[in-house]
Image (cartoon, rainbow, N blue to C red; front, side, top):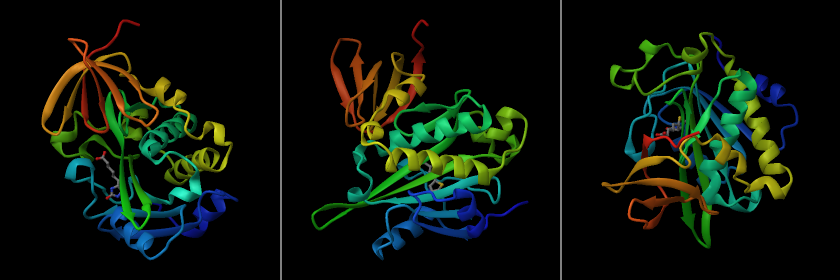
Length: 265
Ligand code: BTN
C-alpha cells in the first residue's frame, strides 16, 4: 500500500496558490478536530491536513465516519473568510461541485452532487463533506471543511448496513485509483475557484447541472420533521427552495433528503 508523503504532495501540487501548509498523519482521531486546533493556533487559510486513517472520523448529524487505512482520501481544509472571497454559506456546495468535477475529469466516473454536501455515484454516497464554523470577536473566524472520499474500498470494506448506500470509485469502475493524483486534481480545481476570477466564485450553475434531484419530488427531514414536495432550486445563499404539495414554499438551510419521484426527462 502506498502512503502519502508531504514532500511528494508538494511536488505534485507545483505552485498551487490555494494550499499554504500541508500536514500528513498516519493515524488521527479526526482531521477536523486537529484542524480546529491548528486554526485556533493561527494556521492560515489553505492549510491542508490529511490522514491515512481516522479512529474517530466525524460525519454530519453527529454520525461516525468510517475511515479505513489507505483506501480513502480523508482530509480537512482551513478557510478564513477574508482570504478566499466567497460566500461562506456556499462552501459545502462549491466544494461538492469542484470535487465532483475533479472526479469526473480524473476518472471518467459520472459523479453527481446531492444537497447540501454529498457526492453520489449511481445513487450511492461516495463522498461526504462536514463544514464546521468557528465564531468569535467580530464574527466568523474560520471554517473547517472535512472531506471524506471512498476511493479504493471493496464492497466488503463497508459495514453491512452501509453496503447498499455507500460506494467507492473502485467499486464503480472496477479498478483502483491513484489517491495522490485525485487529491491534486481536487486541489487544482479549488485553486482555480478560490484564487481565480471573482465572477465565478459564487456561481452555482455547474452545481445545478450536477444535481440529479432538482425538479424532483423529494422528502426532506429537518429537525425531526419530514416534508414532501418539489426541490425547486437553490437560493443565492445555498438554501434549498422547496414547494410543498399545497403550494407553500419553504427554504431549508440544512436537512436530509430522499428522492421520492424523478421528473420526466
Ligand atoms: C458526512 O457525514 O457526509 C460528512 C463526512 C465527512 C468525513 C470527513 S473525513 C475527513 C474529515 N474528518 C472528519 O472527522 N470528518 C471529515
